[in-house]
Image (tube, rainbow, N blue to C red):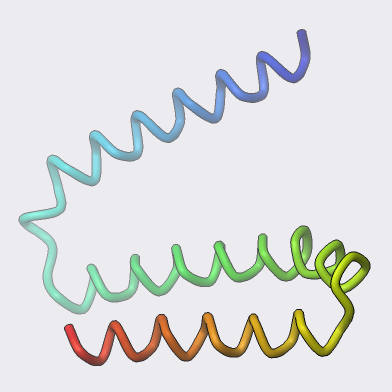
Length: 83
């Protein structure tokens, strides 16, 4: 039951955040939007570094995990620069 309540609260908070972002997103300046995107990207990197990378190193080895992480980061930066 506890896990269900945690996931439900996450779903509700995400829905509220998406609604607020949709309604206020057009009125925000470019600098603010870039700052929010940077904050979201940092949160994702923190989650990946703390949860996924240790397991990937355990299962696949440090060399494969490091090179895959670097390739993914470079691809993300390249796509953003081509935008």
